[in-house]
Length: 143
Image: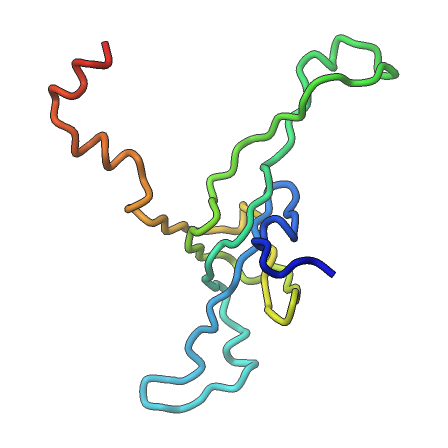
């Protein structure tokens, strides 16, 4: 039995260019207070949720493999095309492309990065803001 105090991205390993999303429950009630049946809510083509784990990206072949004999054992590390999605991002994605899984009583969706339409990232975590807010004199020390 896995230790539930351990973060989910250490207990569940997402592969390839996929992300694990904890979906928003969404509004099941209209503005006037009518509750919608489950089938009406499930017909939505897009959904949103928070990314809780990411895969490493799309694996790339080693360029040196083309020149070697195919029976040789490959040495070296696997490289990946990096993911745009990061843990903690809020994603809007195509619902049809997702696969629902349940883990420890919670519902998650596995979504390929290609099905993500938009990501919202917390701007407070961006190191670029610090550079933009810096005074021009601060950059003289870099040279």
